[in-house]
Length: 201
Image (tube, helix red, strand yellow):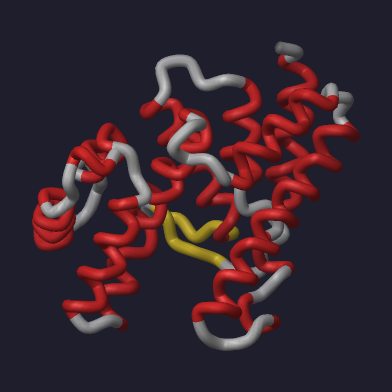
């Protein structure tokens, strides 16, 4: 790995995400949302993987690159509109990340691998894509569960929590209970995790 090239790519990704007009408070500090999420996801990748590859580290930092530039409001309401937005958003993240990596001198194989991880089309057969999914779910629980809980009724909150946990691997779900969340939220997540059949992993 060329450390200089890697650092150049990470800096370019961070500069792009620093332009996020949306802010979020993370661990007591107000930050551009996507920049903060990318850094948190990077921390989780280091915890989840013994030796994350260069491609995985790049993918996790760029997984929501300039996410705000394609708002949900540009698409029809309802599940069809939501799914179309999510798919086109992932493709945009992959394409814009590829452009940055090419500009930093990365070879085509690495560029394609990073894009593949970001797209997360094969969680069952791609350990790195699953690791990224686990990291994103952990960041979601840490930074958004409390806010969502104030807006949803208990049954809907359980549904969101269960759907998120089902996207995670068993090792990823084990990490959920180490999140800096209130006792009630941790109890809920522990209960929901117990409802998932290990055979489904």
